[in-house]
Image (cartoon, rainbow, N blue to C red; front, side, top):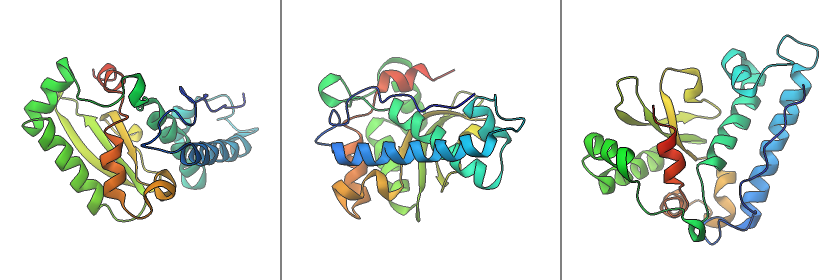
Length: 194
């Protein structure tokens, strides 16, 4: 079975002005390149019929890096929604309640998320996670690392690789994270809760 990248759930320009069409297209093309590497590596192996998330959980080394990046990117794209289509704002209901219980309120959550993004060195990912006991946490992972290999449930991903923001924000990661809040699909994030 050849793994395929799902189409973006919106046009490449739909996230503007927060993420440009050029950034989205470039980033999505990198995701396709990662998946091409995965397909080449698993051909003729016991992983040839496996789902991408299963490959991430079983792989090591270069195969893990490519598979995890492809999975993380797919999760990231599904976490976003054009502002004109209802993206951004604040979470509601059970997600809002969980954020308030864990962080005090939404503003404190955003401030903590932004602070961790800013002090994360190099490339990686920033996640909102749900622990086994239902509480929430924020975690940064380096490079291609993913919570998919652990016990926590990922709810939201923010890509901290430069290709996710450099064309639009240069080295100003904080401006990218500030813009990120305008395109988060809080309904999808809430639907991922257990």
